[in-house]
Image 1 (cartoon, rainbow over the protein chains, first blue to last red):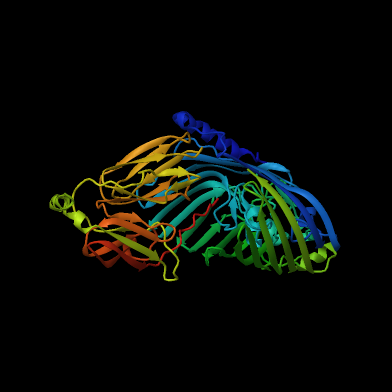
Image 2 (image 1 turned 90 degrees about the vertical axis):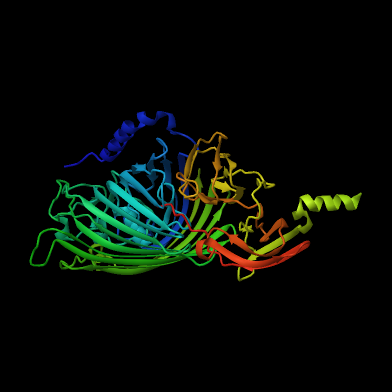
Amino acid sequence: MHRNRLSPTLFLVASLLAVAPAARAQVELVTPETVHGLIDFRLIAADGEPSFVDGGFGKSRYGGDNGGYRLQADVAEAGLEWTPRLNWAWSALIDITAQAGASPVVDLLQAYINYKPVPRSETSFSARLGYFYPPISLEHDAPVWSVTNTITPSALNSWVGEEVKVAGLEATIARDFGVQRLSITAAVFGEDDTAGTLLSYRGWALSDLKATANGEFDLPPLGPFAQQVQASETYSTREIDDRPGYYGRLNWRVTSTVDLHVFRYDNEGDKVSVTSDYQSAWDTRFNEVGASLRIDDKTRILAQALAGRTQFGMETPQGLFADVSFHTAYALLSRDLGKSTLTGRVDIFENTDNAPRPGESNAERGWAMLGAYRYPLGRHADVRLEALHIWSDRPSRTLAGLDPTQAQTVLQSSLRLSF
Amino acid sequence: MGRLFLIFSLLFFPELACAADLIVTVRTPQGKPVSDAVVSLPEQHGRPIHFAWRYTMAQQNLQFDPFVLIVPVRAKVAFPNLDKVRHHVYSFSPAHPFELKLYGRDETRFVTFDKAGVIALGCNIHDGMVGFIVVVDTPYAAKTDASGEAVIHDAPPGSTDVRIWRPYLKAPQNTVLSAVVVPREGAARTVITVGVNPRPDTMRMY
């Protein structure tokens, strides 16, 4: 069964049309505030193994050719964000992105309507309905779900970008207690049943390539057992078992400078539903914690950690078809140097295979270090320089005739124009 | 003739006999100046109050300007939207809850504040916009400038408590009281040390 991947968009547009006539006078469709865009020109020098984008086990978006540095130039992304306002409480967000190396190149990234009535007390309410990223990443705070000070997100948020996006209904209640603010978010969702596929068969990656409504990611060479149950690609946005999942988030702004959150996700996959094109309903659940700390006016620390488990298939003497526990964490320090910003980040990641088949374990472990420098060229352009080093050990690389242990350095420069 | 005028003046306007300036400097414990602090003395009479500055809270560059505005009770405050985008200004402060829908066309709306108190302002469209209107029932009020200094002209003489209020002050109700003695003439200077929390971040979360 190949479902129409544009169904969330059509649903959204129908919702907009239903709401708009009641408030036509207040509609703000196309103005400088409602349309934003970006284009990202990239120069890359990467050594080590080929990228996962080319069907390899590589851990970065741009890889080498198993030798010395390979130079590449790319228009990495062009994105458009439209945030029409229907009246004073209702708005919408539609993100369209064109990503080099993605399949398809141009696609829908997010589309939702947002309801946010004006607060009448210290307690405020908001809700959104549509196709969106759950509120996990502390790194993505720019239009078209992009990062601010680096080029490459952490392993944690790279995975969110690839496999943790939902079509659902989310509501948030927040209450201020002086400077402190407590907010609770809950959501029910579908269209995320394949979450865990890429994380199991390919493993963690550090990549700014984002899942889209019709998008697919090629998987690396699969072992004989996995080939029987999984296609050679995975679609990130799929509803397969018709069972809703849920997530919840608790956020506490402790002081003006300290913000903490905890997040719980469970897609409630039934583990056994499989489509005719071999996409499966994985049962994926994880807990995540995050902290944002402002040390002084110029220095900020972000840290997030995530631990979870993903399972698929029937019980066999060797366990489920796939059963992977996953863990990752990062800490990021950014420092304003007048106009420019310097950022350093450390990532660790690990998968444990709870049902390994001989020769095709999904276990892995690794770490990454990143240094980035961002220099703004006025309001609508910036230059970013980034050095990323990734080390990882993944036994299943032997399926492609590779050494299980790989190290890679990716040097990138980005010229990002935005409006 | 001059002496007669002075006697006449003191007879009918006794406060002229005791006009001193109170100069208050507000600093952090690290010695950094604290701007936007409202310095005030208790009310001494019930006559209408007028301040020298305009009672205007503009929205410009997606910020409230000024960050803190002092107005007297019953002041009619202008809210001009100088941005090209619309703003949905609101306050749920008990002293005067209100909301204004301001289109980005240089539109100005007005609100009259008839009770003393602090009006915290927000914009429902732009979460990062925060501003404060402090409605006072005393003519003796001033705001610290970038150097942390505020001058209350013609302050009444005697011992009194000067009140310091500022957003994010490290004190209950964001308020600190400090005893001062205002002389009958000349100027009194006082330095008040307060802790200030940074302004909370507003993260754009998708």
